Length: 139
Ligand SMILES: [Zn+2]
Ligand SMILES: [Zn+2]
Image 1 (cartoon, rainbow, N blue to C red):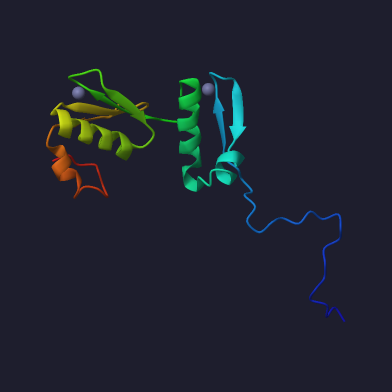
Image 2: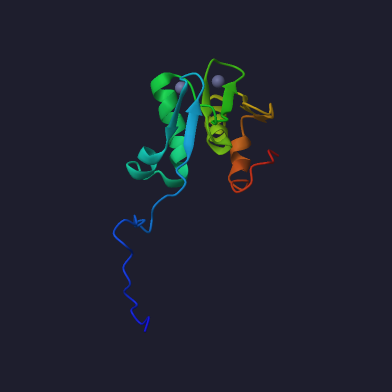
């Protein structure tokens, strides 16, 4: 008897779209005293896995600081005032390598929270190609 495969849910049931994101990531910023969900980044910018990074970069761009959860990598030149702040180690290191390549300056790359520091010397960019997938070595 219960042979009706097209049983519709009752009208008061809210159907979930199949690709609904249950768990929209949120980011808070104590400096702003606010919290955001990343629906905009996920939907409008189609940032996907990069949505947290995208938000953090946008936040920095518009407010001058990063939100709470953004542990940034700093690349600071030891010879001139140049430097950047990036969310990924690779991006910070890439900047350092390019700077070192063009200027022959040594650049220190460090992580905001754990104090680990990597020194990118002029010429290191040559080795970085083969260490692309795993940049824990700088030999
Ligand atoms: Zn803020
Ligand atoms: Zn420099």
